[in-house]
Image (cartoon, rainbow, N blue to C red; front, side, top):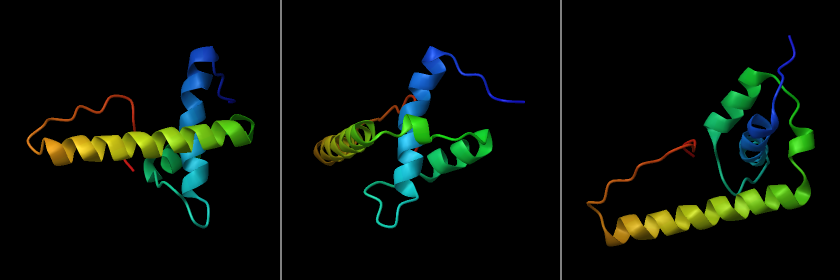
Length: 89
């Protein structure tokens, strides 16, 4: 049975597909093994979701958010981080 995705599901799949694709590169800038596992489990071809500019945008945002979060944790080591909708790297 082929997986049928609506607009919302497709939009949510894009960053997941990009993170999985980047993780599988020889020298990945980010690593998200959970994204790889999910994409493999879904057994879908994600090439159409992983366009060059989209790919670079997702990776840049991921790196920027990661750096920002590390800075917050460094400044406020007792802070509580609630992660909604993201996979661990």
